[in-house]
Amino acid sequence: MIAPTHAPHSPVHGGLGSRTFIGLLVAQFLAAFNDQAIHASAMFFAINTQAFTEENAIGLMPILFYAPWALFGTVAGWLADRYSKRNALVLWKFAEVAITAIALAGFYWGRNGYPEFGPLVVLATVFLMGTHSCFFVPAKYGVMPEILGHHQLSKGNGILESLSFLAVILGTVSGGVLSYLYQGQEVIVGVILVSLAIVGAAASLLIRKMPASNPFKPFPRYVYAPLVASIRVLLSTKALRVALLGIAFFTFVVAFMRAAVYMLGESQNPRWDELKTSAVVGTVALGIGLGSPLAGLLSGRRVELRLVIGGAIGMMVLLVGAAYFIGQMTYLIACIIGIGFFTGFYIVPLFTLLQHKAPKTSKGEMIATSNFVNVTGAIAATALFKIVVLVAHATGFAPAIANRSPTETGELRVLSLSHGRPVHFEIRTDSGRMIRGGVAVEADRPDTLGDVVSHLFDSVQSKEVLEVDGSISAKSIGDRIDVSRFETDGVTHYDLVPTGQPPTTDYDNRRLPSLLFLSAAILTFGILVALTRPLLQVRRMEGE
Image (cartoon, rainbow, N blue to C red; front, side, top):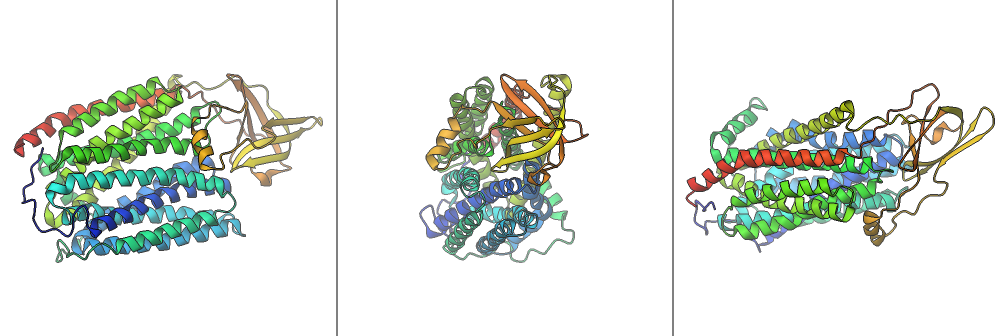
């Protein structure tokens, strides 16, 4: 363990039971919740209003959210050190109220005369919430050593991380649930988000005033110069270098896991709906929420770096388990929760190490720089995911589906939607014959919380699936459409495209999720090998 370099009773502005720490917990919990709820509800709103295709909406979300971290990271770090971190937290919590109000306006406009403009406004709030997080997070983590003594920092980080990821769970799932329950009435979703933002802003006022850590720090002449300087500082000492690399891998593996679970949902025959996919993604955060406070408890009054090694081993074993149990939902979810649990063991000591060893006058800047590196990790995860998928398609590991019947052409007479997804179509061919496909009546959808839970484990699947080109919508009634039909494992798939356009290439991706989980296990083994020796060296150097 890393022993504190300062006396346990050095002056701080609170403690684990102080109003300052409690105010921070409530404020950051609701901030994380709204981050994810807006993320999910904006995506579903864009899909449901047909402003974007599902594929484009899902792909756009991480770009909108993470772009501000790369654009404004150095400014966020400077502000966190130049001014009181308490002021930064309060300012951005009140900014969150304004952002959610903009989302509310977008929901209203999208359903009241501006079906194209409204969704764009809501999507813009994803970028704004990314900006909010870019400035809020350095102040949040940077203020922890100012609130808690070194002997409380591990426990405090465990509590903070646990609540953060609990908020991620609830926000991710609630965004999907609320979008389903209030589809067509998304204004209600906006009102809920604004109300939570107001409560969070009020909670931030509980944080006691505290001085700036570096009040005379000049604004950088070159806005990205501090980034280069901070990276040099982080790489200059082994402890900070280990923390930087370890936290970046955490962001990498979480982004990779999220993409893998989305692919798992998309590869089902038929595929999962957005709600079920969001719920399974949320179980990763559930595990982290359970593991983080236990990691803080086991660390006691110090920074227990051996937990990082144990966490990486647990992640690796359960990633292999998830690959093995890919077709058994109960065991799969248990493995995913376990992966999150050991991820909590892995990440809490690394965050504490970064806070503990970063220079006192530039903690905010160091954390902002770490966030910038984390974004690089998330981008790398996205790139690696796409490479693995492309290679699987190119090598035939996930083969293209070739058993299609001849294309038929006709006039689109009916296109029924359910929560933004096409579920039924009727086409009259030139000979007068009617072609029908999909489900004629909307399938049972989860309407209550109990329904949502049972829906997560439900294995009942439709025997017909409808795939529609993004250019076809309810406005396409009367247009000429080509229909392709193919079957896999007794499930009939219909593919609708505008006449003359070739059908989209479909792949059998059912083996891909196992490959992705195994790839994540191999990467985790690599980081375990890379970090074990440096972690033990840091532990010895700190006199444990």
